[in-house]
Each structure stands twice: as structure tokens, then as C-alpha cells.
Image (cartoon, rainbow, N blue to C red; front, side, top):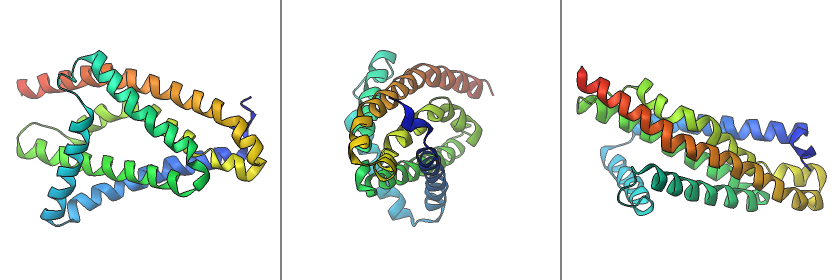
Length: 197
């Protein structure tokens, strides 16, 4: 059932998509620092509207926060899996996510510095890393499904889709659980330490 997981081309595709995300993240950070102010404001406005439309009021309630994260990321995984055969969708999903994360990291660091909030790159990393090390590989795993079609044929690709979805969604569940608990705890600790200083 999961023999495709050990396929060398699948593993290389998976690793390449994860690397692509991190390269895009660096590009997003560079884009933030080099883009004109007007462009920066438009991207910030787009990202804010996107997240505000998906995160209900009171989202800091861990159960609500968990549910919102789980639904949003599950939709991404399902789309990535089903559209992976197009080749373009997996690349766009990983690049777009990387660019947005890189942009937001630089924005958060600058706002923290300007507002005196003490948001260092280390603090931001602590917020992102615990769930990111599970979430990004899960999305890359779903996005790598196309390699099975090229290596083993369409029939094997179609028969592997349920197990790819099950594994990816299981990882997304764990990542959402970590993000809605560990991230909140870390944010609280960093906020208190910042306030004390």
C-alpha cells in the first residue's frame, strides 16, 4: 500500500519540493526588503484580507484555532494531491507558500523592531518551526504524487492517492495540533519575556 513511499524518484521529488519551499521563503524575505513601499503595502493588505477571511473572531481559542488551521491546510493538501498530475500546481503551491512565509517573517521582524515588540528572527522561527517541520513536508508529500504517475503509471498513481491523502492529512492533523497549542504557548512565553525586558 505504501511501497511508493520508498521509491527513489518519489523521495527525490518530495525533497526537491521541500527545498523549493525554503528557496521561495528566502526569495519572499528578499522581496520584502527590495520591493517598493506601495507593492509591499499591497501584499500586506492581500495577506491580511486572506487570513482575516479565514480566521473567525476569537481564533485564539485553541479548539477554534485548531479547527481553522486543520480545515485550511487540509484543503491545500487535497488540492495539491488531486492537481499534482498537472506538475504546475505542486510547484505553484510550494512557491506561493514559501514566498508568503518569507515575506511575513521579514514583516514580523520589522514590525517587532519598529514597535519595540522584540520580535527577533529567532522568536519568529520558534513560532513557525514546531509545526512547520511537519506541515511543509505534508504539503510536499501531497504535491509529490505526480512522480508516481511518471514512474509507475497512471493506474498506480490513482490507486496510491487515498494512501497519499491519508498520510498527508494525518501529518496536517498533527501540525495543526502543534500550531494551536505549542505556538500559542511559545507566543505567550515570548510576549511575557519581552514585556519583562
